Length: 243
Length: 243
Image (tube, rainbow over all chains, first blue to last red; front, side):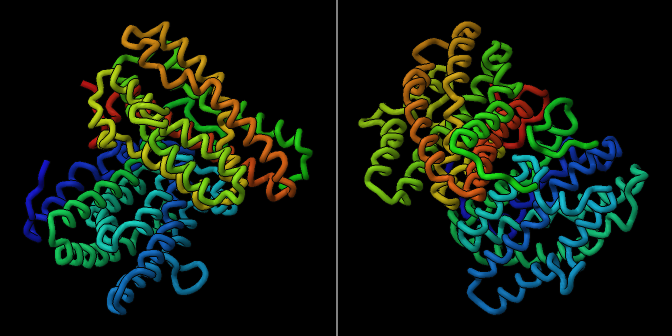
């Protein structure tokens, strides 16, 4: 199948079309999570596994930062590191995620040890880190574009979880509040970059492929959770078992 | 939890114990496959996804071969490349796997394109390739030790599939016959290497961790298949859909 060169706006439309088909707000586990269909152990499993994603984002961003050619680009991308790692102990997105796992009653040392992770989580997250490290800067930036779609999912998740779970409160969901402004700022930048720099058919196809890949990362993390913790009897040997 | 230094035989026993708990012959998808519980489309999905594992083994072995320090070790490991890539077009394990996908009615170009892969398959296989490339030679060799357990699973798989599926015959299962002699030869070597070279507690723990990791690779590939193709409605966007 040969592809045509797209205008910048047509490229944006194609990217948004990928999100409309493949973003993980469409996954049954996401719907179950925000609809209040999960028990505390299942929400613990989600938070525990998703921790590894959160904790790996700075490594992903740092490996891209190391390859960016200008101070302007590096300053832009450095802000992501600041958002996730904070400016002092206990600040930043990774620390805020641990407030969620704390609030759910998980032992922090156990969460940080990664011992209870599903193998599917580990492999998906590491695929993302490797992708950003090994592919072109253009593809690496394009793979961040799932953030175009994240404000919607965050709103659904926060309101649904607060409404439906008595073991969740606004403090334990503190991770998400700053993301509602950080994610659009970051994705505006990444989208403008991609629209400006994907000038050939091959570059545009690579950009579209990068976003599909990243949607697959997020989707397969929910596949692994749904299989292991919602369907009975499927927790892999060695992974977290809710008490 | 602190670990004690193990004798070589105790290390072997610990490795075999990991297999007894974590090898994918215990997975429900494996049991369904050999018990004849799957339909042709589900067996196609298994063969299509497993193709990526088979096709990636030479890359995994070549990256280890490149780091082996002696001609003796490299000759030993080179034999694995010969087994998988053959000596002429149409020979070797990867080509024999394509006879299986051919026999199941899958289009060879589609199989080789990897377009229909489950993301979970892709990430698990790539995790294995990256592990072998990035970890110590000792861990890389230890991660091959799942072959200690493969003769049993191959026997179960071949006899069960021949008995239970009219769309399977001995020719389409030609991949497996040579593996019954290759795998024990290879795992004898790898086990002897590991027993000789894992001399500290840290090295022994790394070896045990490598085998657990590899069991997780194989296990999560079956998780992904079971979730997507046995349970209804879970095929991820873009992945193979049986006709």
